[in-house]
Structures are given as structure tokens and as C-alpha cells.
Image (cartoon, helix red, strand yellow):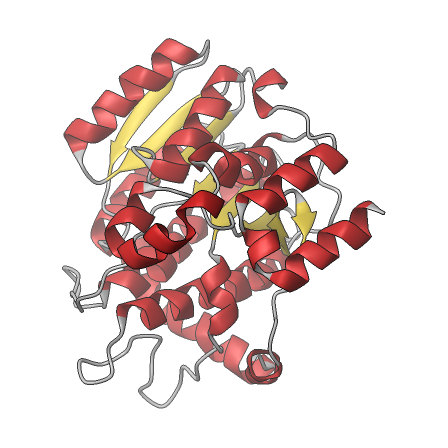
Length: 321
């Protein structure tokens, strides 16, 4: 019955992505509150911790006793968040200042995190949907750099540290990735849209599709670490308010709270065991399909996957040192 109801909600999209989906599934699944778990001694790294899903994830993990390493690009805001989380839990909270789109900064941050000791989980949450094409310090389109290249580099540099404790890497994707095909990344082509074709929403969806594919590929390449990607449904976060104001106005009565959107993120990082293999894509603590259209499935080929991985590796390797 639970699976039938959940699949029906997912098929309707609105039912599955809205607060209705979370409220029904959390009741049917008898979700255990993450805050009731004992994460004492578990060091968890969370990027993008100062608002929205990242903040709610950190609140839950802090109250469960985790030792948090929060990675934010604004030193003042990140320090204020650290004080908040420190007051909530019994674990430690440390700050690493880093813009996840700046590959030099990501490499430096990764070295600092590795030097600090074991990592039980790495949560890639940082990101934003922007409508103007902006280039990073290294000349990459900012959405692709922040959502794909930065996390790929950080994962590459921390994966051995995570493997020592059979840890996890959790990637926060988006339901918007369902609208994007996997592009061909070869022959001079990258994930980045050029100035003439640029559409911020489309670029975001492409980056989120790439995250899900890379999550599966990491799982294949590194069986000693558990990889999980997820989408949070439609949550009422500051990011949605600023980047999709019309969408928020129309759907606001149906939007999830930030805590509901973040629940699966925190659970994936905190649960003792996960009921599905490494590489799984999740929503509301349940595995989800990574495709909803025939075209997205048809373009997700072994060759395109290989080219995506090779491009990410080629671009980020010089920064890993």
C-alpha cells in the first residue's frame, strides 16, 4: 500500500513534490526524527549552511550531536550560523570559508577539512539558481562550477578520508533535473551554455542532471564509500523566493517547509544504514527513478557519462595538487 500511494503521488508530480507528498509519506513510512538519533563523534561536512535546506540540515544534525564542519562563502554569515548550531547541540562546530564555485578555494578548503580528521559524511548542498551568466575566478560558468566542478573536486580530495570510516557523500540535486537531458561533453563542448543560448533555469537543470549521473558514477568507482543523491521536492526557501518568485507565488500553499525539504538530506547523512544501494537517487527517504521522459533516458548513454567524468576530472585535476 505504501509503495502504491507513493508511486501515485510521484506520477502526479504536484502530489509528490509538494508538502502533500512529504506529509503522506512521512506518516506511511513512520519516519524516525533525525534529531532523536545519536550522532556523537560523527564529523559531518555541510556546504551552503547559512539558509534554507542547508541551515535546516545542520539544525537537525547538530541536535543529534554531530560534529559539524560548515562550509560557506560569506565569513560573517557562516560564523553566525556556527554560533547558532553550536548552541543547539553537544558536538563541535567549525567553519571553513569557501566559495564552492572557486576551484582554488575548494582545493584549499578540502585540504583543511582532511587535516581536521575523519569525515563521516560530506553533504553537497551549496548552490543557487541565477538568471545571468556569470563566470568564476577560473573562467567557468558559475552554476556549473558551483554545482558540478566544485563538488567533484572536493569529493575527489576527500573520498579517501571518507572511505576510512565507510562514510557517505550526499548530493542535493533538484526535481528540476528531470527536465534536462545529459548533454554531450566532448569536442570542445562542456556543460556550460554560451552567452547567446543562456537560460539560468535551463543551466541549473543541466547541472542538477549532471550531479545525479556523477553520483551513480562515483558509486561504481568507489564501492568503499556510500554515495546518495536526492531531490527535496518543492520547498519554500530563500533561494526559491529570490530566483523563482512567480513559481513561489502560484504554488506557495503547496510548498514544503524548509525542514520538510531537508529531512531526507539529514537522514541520508545520519542513518546507520540505508535501505538501497550506493548511487541511489532519493526523495522522502525512498528511492526514485532518475528519468521521467524518454529523451532524458535516451541521452544518458555510457559515452556521454564517460565524457562527463573525463571533463570533470581534466578540469579539476590541476587544482587537487
